[in-house]
Length: 404
Image (cartoon, rainbow, N blue to C red; front, side, top):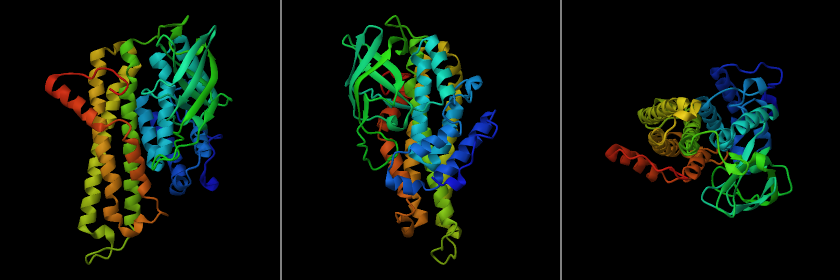
C-alpha cells in the first residue's frame, strides 16, 4: 500500500450524509487503485487493504450512528461497493459480502440479536467473512446444552482469513440449519490458503476447516429456547437472494467502470492510426468509448432504480409478502442479467481502443475481465433471464430457493 497517499481519517469528522459517505468511498478507491495490478499479480491476503476499509469507517455502514456506524441503507451500500470495486474488484467483493453478513441478523435474527449485533459490530468495527455455502451441507452442528458446536469443512469461503468475525452455518441431525457469528481468531478455524483462481485473487475464497467451534445458543440466529422464531416474517428472510444479486451486479458494474476509466486514461496518451495523430481523434475509438459508456450508464441507472425500489422493503420487513418479494426478485434478476452482459463486454472490448501495447502485464488491464468472468460464474445468468421471461409471459414469480 502506498503510505504516502493514505490519508488519516482519525482526526477528521465522520461523514453525516449519504453523499459524504460516497465521497469517503471514492477517497478509499483512490488509495486502493494505487498498485492494484501489482497486488493482483502477487495475490497476497489483503490485510492492509481491509484495514483501510475499516479505518475509513466503511465497515459499519448499516450500524447505528450513536455506536460508531454510518447509519446508511442498502442503496448507499451498493454505491459504496461500486466505487471500491472500480479500483479493486476483490476488495469490492470483500466489502460487499461483509455488508451481506452485517445485514443477515435483520433477516434471520431475533429482535434482541438484531439490536445487539448491530451495536457490537459498529462499536468494535468488525469485518465479516463467511464459511457458508448454500449448496453444501458439509458442516454439522450439534447441541451441547447451552451451546452449539460446529464441525466440518467448506470448499469456498470468502474473506474468512482477513475477517474479525466469521458467519458459520451447520446442519443439525434433525435437519435444522443453524447460523451464527463467531470470532475468526481461534484454533478451530483453519484456512486452507488454496484459492488459486484466475480472477478475484485477493478474496481469500479458498477452503476452511471447522473443528469444535462453539457458540452459545443465544447467538444462533433466530433461535429462542432452541426453537427458530426470527423477528422478521418468512418472506423477508428470503430477501437474501435478490439483495445479494443486486450486490453482485454493482460489483461488476464498478469493475466495468474501473476498466473503462483505465482505458480512457491510457488512450488519451496514445498515438493514432489511419492518419490521425492522436488515438482520441479516431472515429472508431470515439464510437467504441461512447458505446461502452452509454451501456454502462444505462446499467448503472437500472441498478440504482431497483436499489431504491428495495429501500422501503428493507425499512419495513413486515410489508414483504411472497408476491412482493417475488416481483422484486424479478427486478434484481433483470439488473443481474444486464450487468453481467455489460461488464463482460466493457472489460473485454477496452483492448480495441487501448491496443497491443496495453496487453503488457505491467498494466494489468486483463484483471478487470478476469475478475468479472470469475465472479459472474457464481450463478448462471440464463436462469435470471428465464425468471424475467416467465414473469413477463405468465406472471410467475420465482420460488424462493438458494439462488432464486
